[in-house]
Image 1 (cartoon, rainbow, N blue to C red):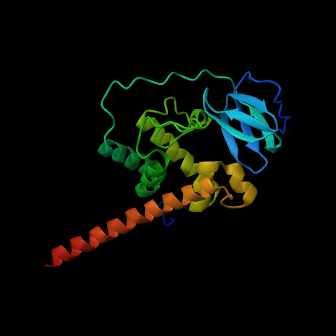
Image 2: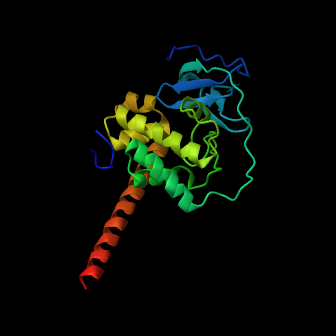
Image 3: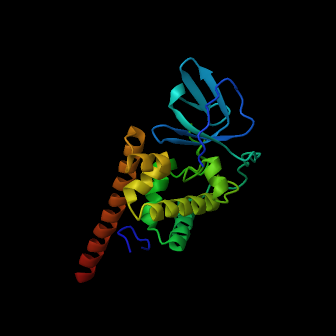
Length: 232
């Protein structure tokens, strides 16, 4: 059992920028290994390319930096549901994290640390790249994991935990690599044989591990104080 509590197609295609609107969403991999899970539109702008991850949000890259493009099965994304109930409480999220952690034998403090880094605990969070919910699942990843509504905490946490479990297994419980893959995609980690040299990814891994260690130290401190009080 590891220290954090768990058991021990790409077909290269031409990047056709002349077509402003893709007929279906695409999975785009850059030559540096970075992946974009659900590109809904591509536009050329000189020697730059805009990869639209939602209708309004895009990432700009060098036109020649694209290595692979995979056309995803066309699907209609469900509309964002209206919030008809009170926001999920911290206690409810904690219970969902505990449930998923137990199912996958992943330390709940690790899951809580990922959630804090990903969304700050906001169930309706949407990133500029289109990632959704507490554990910031991209639409394509969510669909692969069977998550129908990434804004629902129970589905999001279950899917995010299952994905992290897959990555921990893939990288033989190497936490840094698994976290880097969660952030930048497995392709980037495999290309660089470790945490890729992306500032955002390196900072993400650092923040998750710092928060995880902070939680563990807080538990140890609480246990020590409890022991001292009991001994009095």
